[in-house]
Each structure stands twice: as structure tokens, then as C-alpha cells.
Image (cartoon, rainbow, N blue to C red; front, side):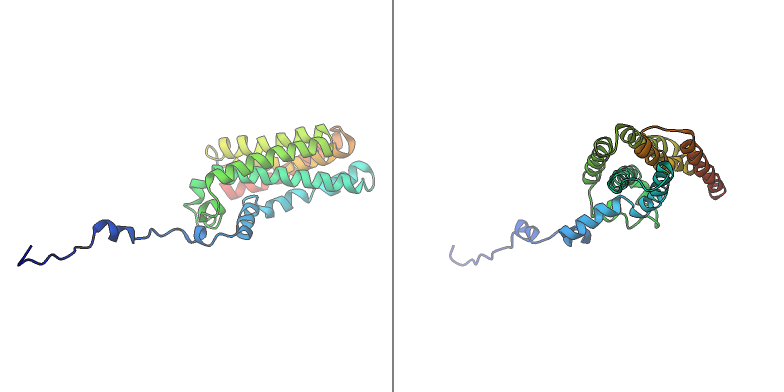
Length: 214
């Protein structure tokens, strides 16, 4: 129209479209290598190492010498996967608690390197593979004991005891003695009194941890 000038007003929708929502650094910088490291971290490798320390010596004791090389390797590998699956389940179950503590602030579910769904799926897959692996590559009894160890740590310790008693670390630690029984069963395909004695001796050592929770 004559005598008037029309000024173009920037569209609010256009301005809004230029606003970017920041994403967590862990998500922005995620690479395949970092993703793999996050999955490994989820299994708590330092705990797996401690659990497997008793496996090979127990197998040698049960065999009265050096057992088959591949039997040792398969037992160690199957046991490592079972322990890793248990720890992965534990990280998933404790994810909300971990987000509130400084000690656990670098765990994958806290940093955002893994989603809750990724962690849970990984734990289930690793658990199934570990039991099947022990069952087929070692023997069925070892597979059943591996399953018992997972259930003991995940259900009895992580889901039930941990939030109900300060002595949970003692009872939950019994799952850490299961490699002794798995190792013995791998060689002898049965559970005998020497294995039960070893299991009892190692379990009794856990009583010293009571003082830490008082």
C-alpha cells in the first residue's frame, strides 16, 4: 500500500529451529571402541579376576595334577562370562543408586555411555551364553552351577538382600565362592567333600567383612 512500509519480522519458529539442545558428551563422542570399553566396564573385570583366581588351582587339585588345557580354558571362559553377566545385572539393578554416589560416577549407565536397555539386553545375552557354554563345552553340572551362581548374585544378593540388610556383602559374597564348585565339577563331573570344604573355607573368610558394614 502506498505510504506504508512493511518490515519483515523474523519468525519465532525460525529462531526456535536454530536452537540446538545440548547432548551429553558421552553420547556426542561415542565411538565403536568406546562402546566396547563401556560394555567391558559393565562386567566389572576387576571382580572377574578375583573370582577366577580360585578356579585353576581348584581344577588342579581335583585332577591331582594338570587337567586338560582346553578344559581349563573353557571353564575359565565360561566362568568369566557368568561373572560378567552377574555384574552387568548388578549395574542395571543399582543404576539409580550409582547415580548418587561418587564412587560409581564413572560406571557406563551413569555416564550415559550405555542406555538401560543396552545394559539389560547385554546382561541377559551374556548370562544365557555363559550357561550354554559351560553346559556344552565343560559339562551340564558346571552349567547348572553357573546358573546357580548368577541367580545367587543377581536375585538373592542384588535384588533382595542388598536393600534389606547391612550384612548383604557377606551373603552376596558367597556367590564369589561358586567358582570353586564349578571348577571341581568341571574336572570330576560331581561335587565331592573336598570341594565343599574349599567352598566353606573361602566362605568363612568372608565373615571378616562383617566389620566393614557395622
